[in-house]
Amino acid sequence: MKTKHIILITLAVCGLNACTADLDQTPHTDSQHSAGEVYGTEEGYRQALAKLYASFVITGQEQGGGNADLASNSGYDFLRGYFNLQEAPTDELAATWLSGDKIEGLTYMSWDASDPWVADTYYRAYYTIALCNEFLRHDTEAAAAGNAHLKAYRAEARFLRALSYYYVLDLFGKGPFVDETMGVGSYTPGCYSNRQLFSYIESELKSISSDGLQDPQSCEYGRASKAAAWALLAKLYLNAEVYGAGAHYTDCIACCRKIAAAGFSLEREYGKLFNADNDKRTQEIIFPFVVDAVHTVSWGATTFIVCGECGNTSSQDPARYGLTNGWGMFRVRGELPRLFAGTEKKDRRYMFYTDGQQQWLPKAVDDQSEGYFGEKYSNLTDAGEPASNTGAAGCSIDYPVFRLADVYLMLAESVLRGGQGASRAEALQCVNRVRERAFGNADGDIRAAQLTLKFILDERGRELYWECTRRTDLIRYGLFTGDAYTWQWKGGVADGRATDSRYNVYPIPAAELSANPNLSNENY
Image (cartoon, one colour):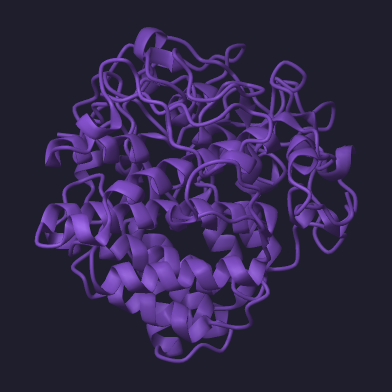
């Protein structure tokens, strides 16, 4: 059974404007529960910790986002914004509801510091950071001394804060920094550079993975274990050069090897990683965002993904995906299915609805007759039953933040980039394990000569599409902006065009610049 996020405390930290200028303020509690009452028992700490986890997938205290945490542009949760920022500008996703969802800027790689999705994602990340800081002001080292549960809760809060700061680093390249030691009251935080954020995240993750977080085998589902910290460190190290921290490929390999030695294994059926029973895939899913149609109801998160992949003007049957209706929010751009050319009938990751659809999008990016729809996510259980009524309660698909297949591919790439600690033979074995799951046998295995960085990038596209990795991967390869690689509607034209390198990072929202003189945007 999935871990249920039962939230008994209202933590309304700040409104949209000047949010991070007040990151150190004490969250307001509701009239029924004071901070002293909540943090007066171990169970109270557990409930408050649940709010930290849930902050990535919900927006308020009531079903569908009622009693909202933040006053934001769109009112959606962090995961919906993060998905849009990581996928919409790339070759993996074509948005359909352009003006209605205010996603033209992301789709055409033409956003600015006033983009609503950029702002919402920024503020949601910092909202979670503020919640974690408040939690850690109560769950101090002294409070946790002699209590194994409070010690673990403290480490988990530090992990979730590090994860949020990682999102700030990866998306914005820099950002204001506040931790629990900086007190409460009026405060204008200073700005951390990409190198400073890298060092802080690295230090936090190394500390809590050696002392604090639970071992993967004993950790309750949905909570962060040591393996989650290792996986985030691997991501950090794989992209370290982008973050101005130099090459850390050997460190990435070391983290990947720790995870591989911790008892994880690949799920046999790829599709089951993304269905409504994917909380059972603990052998591969290292850390998820838990989504539940009773306790974490949201019209964002994975409800947005699964309903968005089902067309509302196509012949797709929503019931095939455990849905009451399709929203038709997006399809894939033609470059994604092209990665499977020649293996469409063999590779089980080729999960696209093609009936009546063209692969390419020559007329318009928002024309639903063009482009394949997705079939990767499903609100059906293993038994083929709908997990929930998505028309009233949203879906019950957990979002896999880190999973083993990604770890295998990170190790292989790090070897090819010169990292030490694993051989090319081991790298090849990791890649072929992923492909053997995809093909069901060894027919998709590659030879040593075929193991190149270009192959790894394409394999990451085949394995991890719509899992919020593509933008980061393309930037690491130097292909996201510029003209070295163009795709349909990149830059707003049908055949794609070169784009400015400033789009490798998102701008800090304009309202935040007005509130905090320590912040600035280069090239925007």
